[in-house]
Length: 170
Image 1 (cartoon, one colour):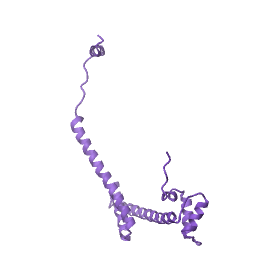
Image 2: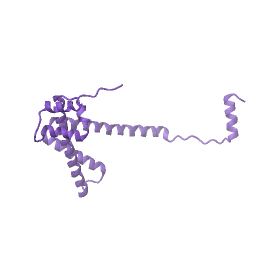
Image 3: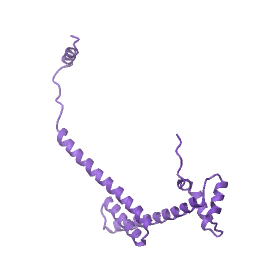
Image 4: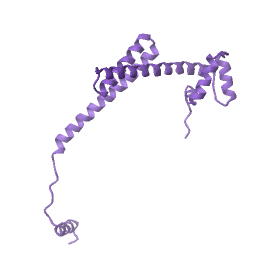
């Protein structure tokens, strides 16, 4: 069964070279309006409307902004680690997240804020799930972990004889 591709995903799933070509047509020296770019895409067999092109441009710039912030945040965390302020990978990851969050908050962009909150919520869910599973494992080990199956003192012949008795063959 073929699933219908969401109209907003059509341009996002194109190769990066094609995405850059679309952005160049929209923002280059001979910038086109959305409807002209959409017509050009349709000529190439890519279903597009001016609304889809507009949404793509907005998404593209948001993604690029987030990539730049992420790289800067990682560089800042790496610098902190080199200075000795950070000792573990978890601390480095947390510092990078803090730097990223602060950059996003400083711009007061509601879309970035919303995206950031979704990421933070998912991350918190993962942490809670890890803790829950660790607790379940601890309870399971406390209940069943110490029980050992006793080694049989029966010989192989005695085992065969007992199996036959159980099955009623003997």
